[in-house]
Image (cartoon, rainbow, N blue to C red):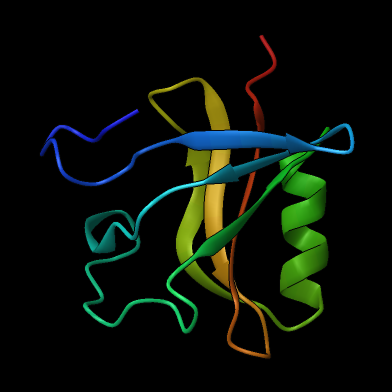
Amino acid sequence: MLADDGERIMHAQIVINGGLIMISDDFPEYRGGAETPPPAGVTIHLEVDDADAWWARAVEAGASILMPIDDQFWGDRFGQLKDPFGHDWSIGAPIKR
C-alpha cells in the first residue's frame, strides 16, 4: 500500500516460513521529524500480543523512544524505539476493546 504522497510504501508484508514480516519506507514525520534515516533504512516491526508489556521490556533493556507508544488511527497500540545497537524497531498490537 502506498502512502498518501503516492511515492513511499506505507505497508507491505510477506510471509516467510509461516511468520509475517511487515515493512515500509522511512517516514521521518512519524518518528519525531528526525531527518536521519535508520542505519539500514528499515524499521523492524514486532506484532505482539501485549504491546505495552513488550514496550516496557525493550525500554528496560536500554531502548530509546523514537515515537511513544499510543493508540493509533489504524487500530493498533504502536510505538517506535531504537535499540542500544542503533536498530529501529516498532512494536504493535491490535487495540483491545
